[in-house]
Image (cartoon, one colour):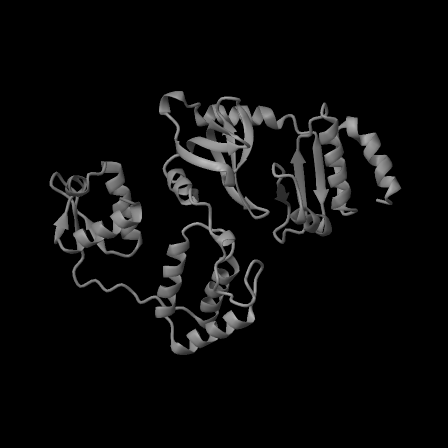
Length: 320
């Protein structure tokens, strides 16, 4: 049974009883104590007025005659929510069905005038990836990877993963401690620490075949992982400061393993720190070409000596 379905059933179970205990929830739904407690806390967060009774026979009961405040939205809040949905509906985001039902529920909470405004906005505004002839049409390319929701569900419980990928004609599995799951350049990416090779890795979710929790007995501690990552970070040999024009170029294209750290709240300045394999001439050439692509709005703070002279000659040649 999926978590959302289980919570809905538990809510109905609770609503039909004057009181209940954790043990009753565990027996009724065949779940662990920790899962039962998490579900009850989530139900409380959704607005069900529960009161805990302390003591040997303690449990919970639902407050009688409790009226929850009606959710009301201002006109600008409605527009902000709707535009956020519009801007992201063709972005391969997970929980697509839930997003659709959420939009329908929001429409049921607002006035007819507010609904008319949203219909007009839907006709006027177009975002990247939207079909201009039918903005509500979902292409197959808009749908998220089928395993993405399973991956997120596991991550809410555990960051230690056993992931299986299709790489060319081969199928390979890796033990990974997940650091980030992020979307970049129309791709969902897993950034993690390979527990076998003890190095930072990036995998595309598009290549994912299966994902399961990694056995507890084979795990490195989080402290050990941080130490290993810290040792790897000492190998950074390329440091750049980017201005707004270079940041715009960066967003158009950059290597998957490179990310920015913004240095101001308006995201107009950023630092880039990464490691370049100086023993790989092809990698050095690729990075040099990419730095030229970023343009004049960069300041080089640190550069591998193996690529410095050649890059400077090319910068002068191109007038940068």
